[in-house]
Length: 289
Image (cartoon, rainbow, N blue to C red; front, side):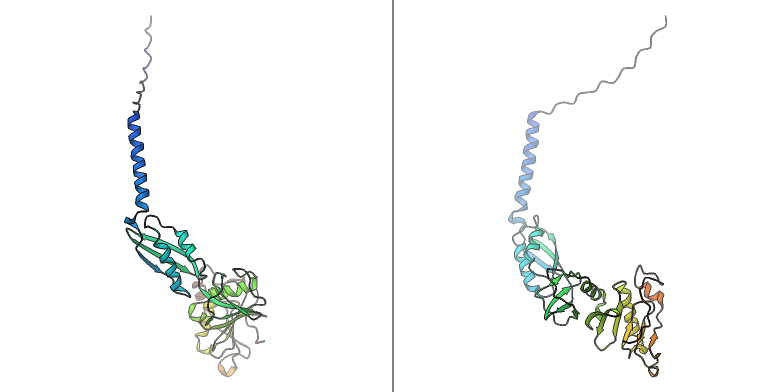
């Protein structure tokens, strides 16, 4: 008879010892003590906010914004900062877009205010209201020194709603700061969007596409000595801007004088724009109306 092979013996799983009820009670008690201690410490005078620094509030009503934030912050601790409460404290100030809080334990709190940027004044039917670069209406903010945005009807609500006015706001929002200060008026006519520059030519932008590239082209053309006497600059195709209104004696053609801008240089300063974009809806070189 052949001997049967012995079946392999499986290892016997060892039973883990059951925790005692006493140990569980100790763990629960420790967890409760730690949680309660944290809750006490989070709101205790040991970490109460005593030093508040506010940065970024520089526009209209900045002193009031800083005061409101400091008062709200002193009711908090550095371990329990309520950002929503800080936002609510300055919700009535139209220039404030958002608030960030950075605690510096044990007693410091740094608050950063992000302000909206006023770019123009919407004028319609005898009323005027300042508008920010994001289209938010800044009612009550002074309008001195801002360019006029011509509109047919006064804007309602809290933001610009109609499409033509939004395009004019976008035009000013895309303008480099150095030239935006010189713009006195933005309107729309036969050549689309147009900006009137103080002691300078009228800038014809056409559509609201590629506004950054068009502003860069305007700056380049305006810096050329031959365009100093131009009455307008056609920017509808930013790679081929045209300075118009120059006489032949001033070095221009009877109707227009095409700038010597390098299209590649304009495109290189406007990321994402190919040097030979064909999206423009009309050619340059229009005569003065």
